[in-house]
Image (tube, rainbow, N blue to C red; front, side, top):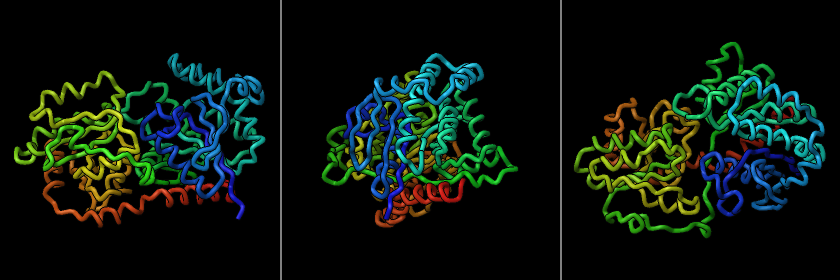
Length: 417
């Protein structure tokens, strides 16, 4: 069978085994790599990572396309116009950082266009939403490419995701362009598609496909075992709740801390909550908040944890919590389920209808601290079946996710959408 040839165009990714890609640890970076890796087991996948400079290499069956200044400057100014860039800059009045980032992507366009023209690709798959998406769309159309974009969340309507206003304005305009021009995109949850539909009630959104995320961990021999009880000085008979996600206002670790104080003494005194993730908003000082809590030493900030160690954390924990204000999917929830661990989350996150099952998860009835505390109590009071939870989580396996993307590629290629 002839394989499709797919080019991923991504701003960055995360892979612990590749040093140059081990700096951007976060859900987006890991997920992009997992998507590429899973599809590469079935089709031919090349990937162009625009943020970093590196020579070509192959890993996990993925061909990494060279990105060097020599190659970029050899093709600069070829096949693309400065006018689009100038219009973007004038229209959105972007910050100096975003301006430099957009100019950098514009400088790369000639080289990327050359890669595409000579690569014989059946599909170009872009991830994320940034000013340079407009540059990419024009270049793809000029090269007569079939392409899709995957949006991993919506930032433009959120008051809790702290990005500059120009970025939110651009996302709104790009969504409008997607609908107007019938650009094929995928989104990671039905809630995201529903929000887009609420904006464009007169459109059918046939060009918007929902493809949920999937869990993926290193093979058994590459896992690094960690005794979390010993590492964090937790008594052996204690209960452990994981809260996985970079620390930020939107991820809402603050509510978990505030709710912890409302948990009855008999549970709270034996409960330890491990917050896993980097602090990406220095002004959001949750450690200070935690220091004022009852049993403050039970609220532990682990920082960034390598993905190869995460199976140990999930295996030894009793459950997983995620209280984000806005959440495109909630990957830590299905990761926890894959190890048979029950989860709690707010019912209004985008992916709740996609991932909820009573045998595996508790939906918090409202966003009050009391309701969160009650959900934690329920999680530790109910009898859960690890086998049933694992069986339910198997539907989020990475092989199925790859098939879903490949099916969408074929639909775009053969149906002309």
